[in-house]
Amino acid sequence: MAVYKIFPEKSATLYSYYPTLNSGLDEILELSTFESIEGTNEVSRILIKFPSNEISGTIADKIKSSSFDCYLKLYLANATSIPLNYKIFSHPLASDWNMGTGRLANLPITTDGASWGFTQQSGSGVWFSPGSFPSGQTGSYSGSNAGGGLWYTASAYESTQSFTFISTKDIELKVTNAISASYTNVIANNGFILKHSSSLEFTTASKFETKYFSATTHTIYPPVLEFRWNDSSYNTGSQEVMDSNLYMVSLGNNKNSFQQDSVQRFNIKVREKYPPRSFQTSSFGYALVNYALPSSSYWSIKDLDTEEIVVDYDTSYTKISCDPSGSYFNVYMNGLEPERYYKLLFKTILNNGETIVFDENYYFKVVR
Image 1 (cartoon, rainbow, N blue to C red):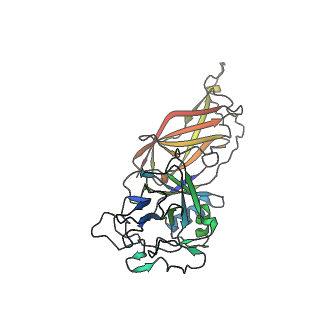
Image 2: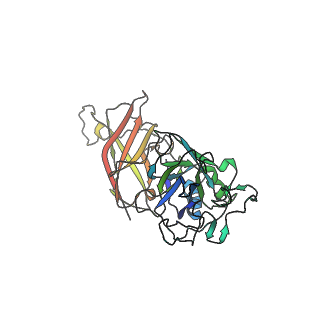
Image 3: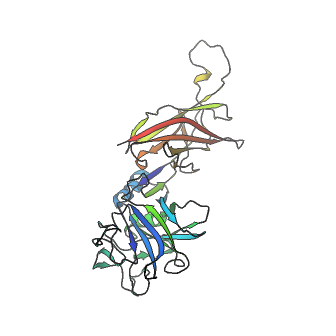
């Protein structure tokens, strides 16, 4: 198992209605279609970038030779008038950009960073010249309002997510191909642009707002780039494997408090609830026999205050390992917000198909 999270170095929203406005310090990122006071159809798009050195360090030093998946995740702050069904797209940006120090509400507007029309600041670094895109790159614009980003066109780098009426509106886009290409220097790491489909942008089809927490949010919901890979191994040695629900599970080394940048190995002890009675002359007996969890066993982490699942059960990426001394798993604490409490949960699937969830109130805190 392994789940490792990287936080963004910058983010901003581009507004077609405000060609020179920078919003780099806003706590909210807006992915919307709207009608201006003049009655024109307008849109907003999201820019977000993660540090190149952290991406390369994660792949080279932690994942190493393993295959991995990578997900871009943003958390919904607010939504209004959303349609029953819609789709969003992400593309790796083909041009670098400046975060700036602006906010949407600033008067006069701040123009010292990326905007709809410019990559660096007002009058500096246009995204592209209309009708003349570099090879392998493209952008889009409405009428004479050129801008709104420049991105790589290869279909392998495009990521999509479809939303229905009942689905959660948080964003989780699989961007493995784009991250791998930037890591191997096939494309530059300029971050990502997120946008609605062309069937919704600059049309009268639907007007709605979706707002997400940004890189500068003061909440526990910043955007993340989440790496997932399977580094589990399973070797029971001479241990017997748990084969029924008549067992107790405990953590043998929960220190209850962990540094934010630490990696903790949690050891799981599995004992019989009702060991057979026997008369022995030594202090060691059935009660001390440790069993192994079945190979189909997984861990999960829940935020203790909000009750939200921070890391969900996954059959590949949160798989519990085993060696001859017992079952175990590793947790990278970097992806958890500091000064908060979390709960560990375990799930195992027996050979007979029965699923058992262990919620034994195992808590820990992440500290700075």
